[in-house]
View 1 (cartoon, rainbow, N blue to C red):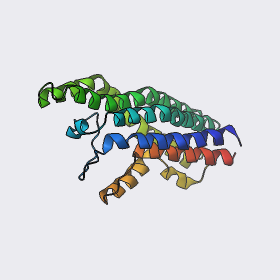
View 2: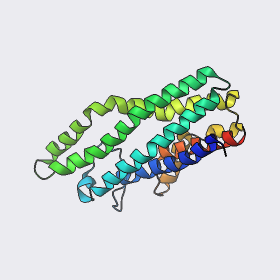
View 3: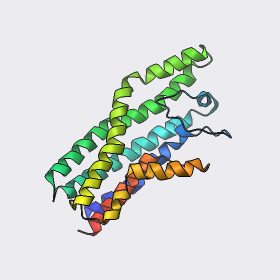
View 4: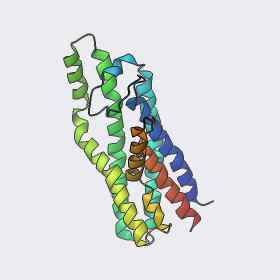
Length: 216
């Protein structure tokens, strides 16, 4: 078993941890649930649930994220055997994702905690203003993170696979966060409770790495 397979297995586990980390932020436990990004919108149900769920979300993401970025770095190493440009692009994208991705999730977990802390002591409007203020500096990094994690990784990997820079079957172009978002979004429309599509997408990238490692 080579290092690419080992890191790939770690990446699958890490991706699933990240996918699970989105669940406490997305679902209130109420009968009519709607997914709301904590960074973007304040949700009234934050005060009705235990603060432990936001702590759990943070730690799942904190533990899971390193393995997903290591997976992408190892994919870049493999791609570099055939294409220096694509390898460098993926490494730069991974670097950007790594320092903005955790910031995005920290903010998503911090806003509910801030809102809960001041709710009741001040008006609801003031509580919302405090929660929004907690995410002020994360707005731009969050946009960069989303672009790098969803679009950057997907585009580079699709090009690498279709061009032959990464030696895996061509259908692996479907193994990415964009595909997982579409599929899980359709499942959610049926009323099914889903995990985070980004984490699932990175677990799929890890499957690509395992396959590439096997085919070496």
